[in-house]
Length: 249
Ligand SMILES: [Zn+2]
Image (cartoon, rainbow, N blue to C red; front, side, top):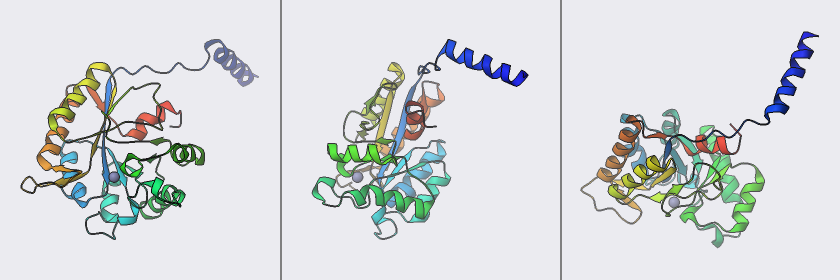
């Protein structure tokens, strides 16, 4: 009887107050992302992230892992997982999906690979080259594997509420000044900055397209860590941010 009364009282309270209001963000957020699977991210990037106690999301093109010497091994990917990073999908092969007849297996197969090889059911998908048609996005929304899609090469600036989680924008980092200014902007406007790194090169090597010098990478991670330590921003993986928005924590 007493239990029944309590339940009724709780039900009445729920009706009176309605659903819990969305919690307003009180601080900007920065998310760090690595794309493709170059082994330099594991060899040069991960130790620096660990030094600063930073985690991010690594988007893996699963077809090259352990198969192409340029790419990480599955053990390397597992090291990211053990360090607390989110493991997400960057398709199986790094090919624009609109060029493929069988783009479905790129989207689904990469999730299967990550599940099999590192025991992770990825919730994030980054289409190669940031190229995704409406058909691709609609398919991803409907299959129920992924909770979000990130694109690339925008300004990396996202709102923290009311955003479209199937169209998140990232800044492909090429300069520390630009990336650190974005971190500051996220702090000033209580918004969400998403940074994207590709391959990382030792400073003496001249980086090919899509790669950048280790010293730029390190400078950006240092300014992210500093902003966090000063209480200006929080550092979260994309899945941690999106979990709130989609109520799927
Ligand atoms: Zn890529």
